[in-house]
Picture: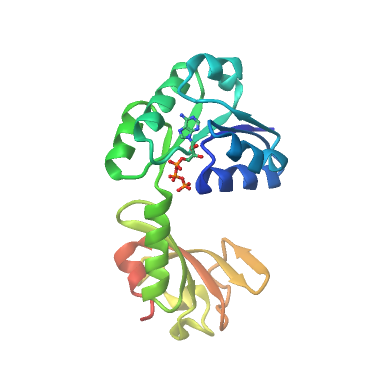
Length: 215
Ligand code: ATP
């Protein structure tokens, strides 16, 4: 089973650590603030007060044996960068680092972060999409030009099969799944009908996807 360590127990780090724990994974939570440790101690496997800038302390924790280490330090950019460098130097295979800004993210990538996440920016974009389009439930940006959209089926497609809807042929959009109440039809076939209130999980170019969004 994968083992995770989360460094920095702000709202983001705490959310990641608790969710992984709920999913049954082993989680080591690290923060230099003792209060944060006390708050999380009953919700993770281990919680320890350590300044993650301390290379010897990280080594003593056997940090390199963890499959994934998440650096969730936000405001102290210098600390987040230094800790990322140390983790890679210590041989951690996968370091996921949270960035506050694009520049911060670029530096994290340069110093070896395997994945950089921008939770505030991404959440802001997701919220904006769901606010401006009445039928969009969720929006995940894959690249500046491509996204995955969860969208309530526009009326024009109701009663048609996927093939008849021409979502792929005309709109250039691929439906990966259809959510119908509690049921999820993964990889629907061209002959699957689209019903009223179906939620389409669609992938495509942002411009194409915009054509199935409603104001
Ligand atoms: P969020 O938005 O997720 O609440 P944030 O971006 O505001 O978090 P910070 O509050 O800057 O992030 O940092 C998150 C946590 O990281 C804090 O609890 C802080 O004590 C911890 N932290 C900061 N520097 C270190 C460090 N060197 N070692 C360990 N923990 C640290």
